Image 1 (tube, helix red, strand yellow):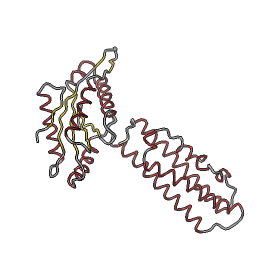
Image 2: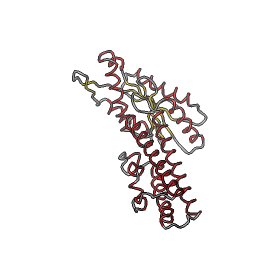
Image 3: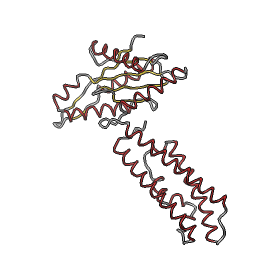
Image 4: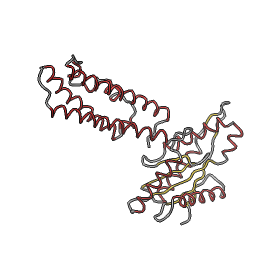
Length: 294
């Protein structure tokens, strides 16, 4: 999951849409110049033409580090540069009034198609992340949670993965809404979600499970490792301070229930087990972590 806020993700998708449109216009102009034997933009012959074109200007100035690490985004770099290298051969032949060789045109056409596919894939990945986000907190929503948990369960059934889930609930959160109003409660909830997200491992996932409840999926974990992670988060949440409109610091605590996903167990049963452990944490006084009994 991309750890980018919703507004920034929307902006990146809009920029990508514009960059894709610009690339399409560039391609159409190249074909028109070749077919109609019209003058072409000689910047397309430059060694750094892939950086000068409008798509390249977006690509090489995309500042988000997480997007830059995306495998599809990195594949685009290779395909985009090759597209410009292949078109240079076509333009050089046209400039010298030589025939365009079929192999050179095929190389160009195939590179363009691969580039388009990578662009569409990147857009799909970004949009899937955006639409599977909870609009308030920015973390994944319940729909993507069930899908991800089922995929994880398939790995567990094949004995290639161990995974622990935790359900976290903010203690006495109704008091925050009653005392400061729901808008401030939303702010507190969003800041807690952001704190949790920042303190998970790169391959852990967090989902908004209910009103003030979150489910965390921790692959590559046994119960001891997962419990240590959630304990650190529990302690950290207690130190988060949100300022009310009057400047008063607002703090909350969190209770959590953990369980390990097991083969031949349904997702629903696993969630119920973690929920029962959360209930026990509440009964024991809140602000604590309880591991479900096996």
